[in-house]
Length: 317
Image (cartoon, rainbow, N blue to C red):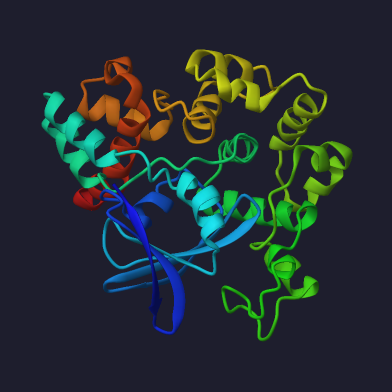
C-alpha cells in the first residue's frame, strides 16, 4: 500500500508517494489516454511533467518506478484530487501479473511485462468525452494543440488564479499574465459544456474541422439534460455507458469505448482502432476474444497498444 512523506528535493518542497505499485509516469502519460500534459524534464533517473487535474495545475516528478513526487500541493489537494486521479488505490501490477500468468500468448506476456508501469488515469467524464471526439482521425500533437486553444478560449487561467509567481513551464519571464498565457493555453481549465453550448463559435479558431458539429452535439446533450454524465458513470456498466454516449452525433464505438475506459471507470472497455486491428491481425491470427479479459480488458488493450507502438515498430525499423 502506498504512503506519503514530505521531502525537500533540490530546494523544492514536495509530497513523495512511495510504494505506488510499479507506476511509470512517462509510460502512463505518454500512452495516449490523456492529452493535457507537458514534459518539463527527462533525464537519466528523473522525469517531470505538468498537467491540469480538476482545475488544479499539478507538477509531478518521478525518480524511480512506484514513486511519485508532487510539488506545490496541499495535503488536501493531494488526498482528494491527485491520488484518485492517478488511481493509486488500484494494484495495476497485480493486473499485469494476472494477465501474464493466464494467457497462452507469449506475445501478450511480453506486452504485459513491458507496460506494467501503465495505470489507467481517472479522468473527468466530460473532458474525456470531448477530447476523444477531437481525437477522431487526428494525431496526438494536433489533438493537444486544439485542446490548448479551446482551453485558452473558454477556460480560466489557473496560473493567475493560483497566484503563481513564475510560469510553471518557464515559457515567460516573471509571473504569468493573461496576454502571454493565452498564446500558450496550457494552464487553463478545460472548456465546460455550458461554455461551448452558449458560444460554439469560440471553437472555430482552433480549427476542429468536421468535429465541430460533434463537439457541439455533445455540449447540447449535456446542457439540455439529455445526457447526465455522472448518472452514466454511477451505473458502472460498459454497455450502458457506450449506448448512451453513442446517442451523441458523431460518437461511434471507438470514441465511446475510449471515453468509457478513460473517463467513466469502465476498465472492461476495449477500444478498437487501427493499432488494435493491426495487432489482432498480426499477433492473434485475426481474432481476439476481448471479453475473455473480463473486468481488465481495457488494461490489456493498453498493454497491446504500448507494446506495438514502442517495441514492435522499433524492431521492424
